[in-house]
Image (cartoon, rainbow, N blue to C red; front, side, top):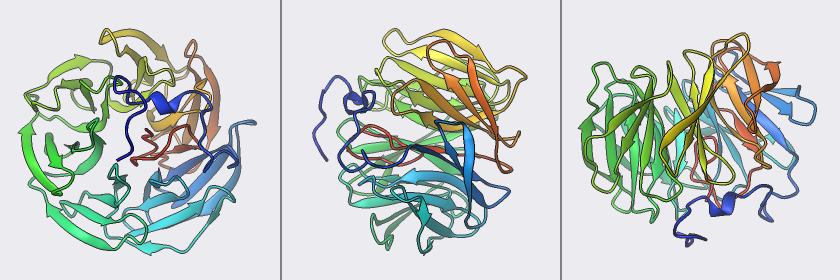
Length: 338
């Protein structure tokens, strides 16, 4: 994998507007997969308006930037396809047959895509470009969905939504090397994110109403930090100092100071809502989140948490991608860049 720019900051390449030559000329857009409408709404962040609606496959869950950042992959889970979108033109390409692509990640060396085949109970390692199946790792948990990678890329941690478990996976061996049940009855872990210093892992849990705090190297039992009802998405600020936590069940966003590991703010959406998955704008000034149960998208000012815009989209908006974003390569999901 490419060496870290700063061994003490995994996100040092993600500074405001530090766009790589690969993406610097792409138009700024927000791509919103609507799971119940089988479409992707395209928002112009300059006007906060939907400028196009792209038909895709059945039940699109996430829009995922490829490792080389040249393609956006729409994960059509029930349609068992990936729809590529060219971020330079905004046009979709030829669909690729991939079974049960609930979510998609990329190994840090850029060699493999890792398909989170939730219903199939598999981690499927595929060629990152052709999507040809290379290895399948069956998992003994239910609902694999989100992940993040260690600083050296040697392992990644995966959440299992429907059985309340975490997996630790050896990247090179493509093999599960650890598994644990979360210490909460009815736990439903969601997004996974490693801290900027690479020492602490956070896992959102929509039923435990908070984030689990974990030592990934030791993979010992985590402790729970309450944040709000329905904790769901996790996003790092452009200065690597804060973690934004969307609380889908109560229409709020908690802000965690990564250095002190303390919650410092909570932003409430006016008129409520269901903030879910999303990303941070290239300049770091706006947090974009889908409103999963309200057919809308929220644009939130990261300086004070006020709502800038509330935009109607299709039904069931989920893992939206803000694009382009700073960084040298993508590890997947809605944009984990290093």
